[in-house]
Length: 166
Image (cartoon, rainbow, N blue to C red; front, side):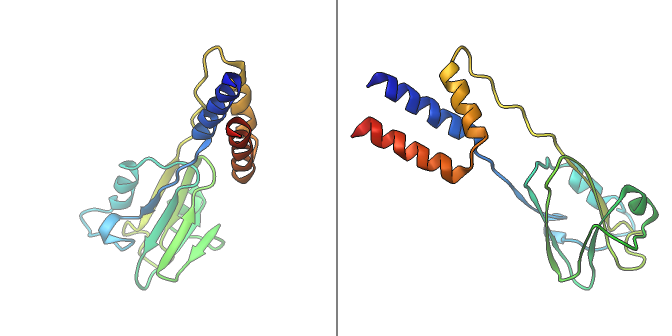
């Protein structure tokens, strides 16, 4: 019985490690996505540098009479894009950061990018999972949990719970 509890504990610990938390960032804070004052043309890059972005976080752009474009670095530097990778102009746009690296955003309205309505987001590499010292069972449980979907893991967890307590 104690070995079942040990396995159950290790499985629960492994499930806890693979939990993913994402954050929804309101771009620009209360000001939203709007042309900054002439004194602060780095407003959005300053805002981005104060946040830590991870894979699966989302950016929420709130604006009026404008648009958001996801562009290449070259297009960002030129403040011009004919084929953006992302485009939205509905006033409430959401963009999911799906890989590590740099993302470039700008306004699609003529003159707004040049006035500072642009931003670079850096998404961090995922952290390596912590190592479990001297525990083959915990290591195997972690590797299994990392490679398995959440619903499958939950079903497995319930099966182990039933086996231990029934």
